[in-house]
Image 1: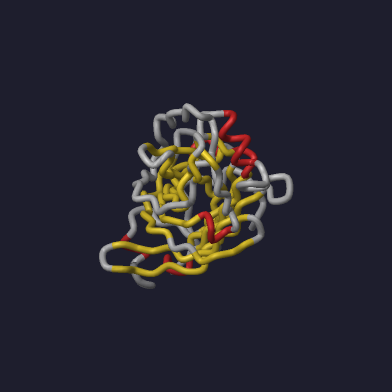
Image 2 (image 1 turned 90 degrees about the vertical axis):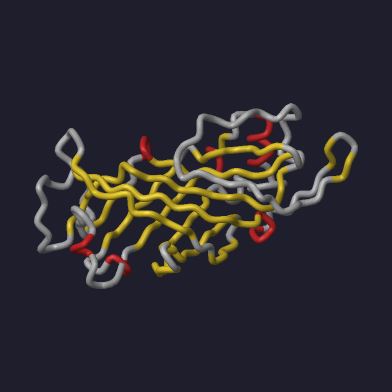
Length: 230
């Protein structure tokens, strides 16, 4: 993807796109109790994508409400909201803002900054542009997916607890992730987040962003659906 390849992307449209919450997934998978994995997601996510005339100048911003964390276990989710993990009373939001796009081999990398608990770190995400298409309601949609890996201790999520009488320290996770919604995590028997590993695979999938503001000069087959960002 170079500055001259926008014409090579089928249906490419330069403009600003709002997330469709019903078709957006921001999730994670971490090692739990050493022998299993916990999958979770954030239910309340917002953001927008700006596709530039030069695709490499495009940008993404994502906002997640940390109170909406869902691992399919209420006790564990409450523990994750507590000051021992996200501390959502003081730090309710997680944000990701892209800073650039580059090609690495056959893949494209979205460089960006992730902020959790007011700590910002550079986090690259491998991403895929899934395409542009018209929807049944006369709108226009874009789909993207991205994934990467973070270490929670980089964001001052440093809890080290005790599980069944054994001290638990953060360990690296070798878990994998999907950029599509999973069927749902299996609950932990303990209902606690104490044994979550430090390393987490994070993923974003959005195949429902709606065009709200086309770049001047771009011809659209259908008008923008909503919003007045132009």
